[in-house]
Image (tube, rainbow, N blue to C red):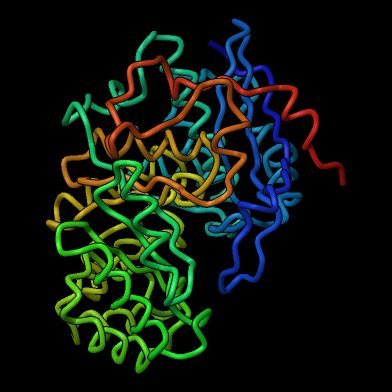
Length: 388
C-alpha cells in the first residue's frame, strides 16, 4: 500500500448567524480547518485534520504549504502501513538514520508549531488508511476499546449571568450529564466569572458535572482569586487557567486549590506534556490530535497520563476528523473517562462529512466503522476550499 499523493485543503465555512457566539476571541463568524488527504496505489484514501489554531478560526495557508511542499516529498512511495516509521522520519528529517540507529530523537529545527500541526493531519490520515485497509476502526489498532460507551460533556457556555443557567440546562435537556462553560477575560472581571459560575451551579444542581475554561486568559493572581470564589461549586475541572506559555504559573495555580486543573490542548508533542507533568501543573491532560502530532502522539500522551495517574480528556473542538481521532484515542486509553462534544456552531462537525455524528442520551458508543468511519462531503469541500 504505497503512498502516491498527499493533499491538503484549507476549508473556511461561515457559521450561521444564529449559532455565532462571542468569546475572548471576539465574535466567531467562520470555522476553519485543514483537511489532509493521503491516496495510495490501491486507490484507498485516508483523511485527517491539521490545525493552524486551537479554536474555531485560523489561517491555514501555511499548513497546506507545509503538507504539500515539505511533507509530501518525504512520503510519496512510502508504505502507508508504517505509521510510526513515517512519524519519526518526518520529525527527524535528514538525521532520521541517526535517530533510528541510536534510539533517540534527532529532531528537525522546526520541531514545534507548524510542522507538528501538519504532521498531525498526515498521521491521522495514515491511521484512517490502515483501519480501512484492515477493515477495523482505529481503536482496534490502538489495542481495542476499554469500554462499550463513554459519557460526553457538552462544550459551550458563553451566556451572561442571567442566561448561563438556561443555556447549560438546554445542553442537559439533550441528555448530557456534564457541561463546560467559558470564563476569563471575556467577563471583564474575575468577580463576573465567579458570578456566572455560581449562577450555573445553582441552575444545574449538584448532580451535573460542571467544567470551566478560561482559554488561558487569567493572570496567576486572578486564577487563584477565581478558584477561591468558586471553591464550593464542585467544579469537575478548571481548564487553561492561565497562558500555556507559563507552565510554572499553572503549577502555582494548581498548588493553591483543590479544583482539578486541566490543560494540554495548546501543546505540541508528548515532550511538552511531559514538561507540564514534571512541574505538577495538571490533573487532566487534554491533547488535541490535530495539533499534538496526530493519533500516534496523542496515544503517547495517553500512556503518560496512565503512568502518572492523571485523567485523559482529549480536546475535541474541531472538525469531524479531529473529533473522531480524539474519540478513538479516548476509547483506547484506560485514563480517559469523558469526551468533549461541541455545542457551538460547527459546520465542520456536521456538514463536512456524510455520516451523522451524535451523542445519544449524552453517551458515545465505541467506534465500529473502519478507520475513522468518516466520508468527506466533496461538494462541501469544493464550496468552501480557500485559494491563496
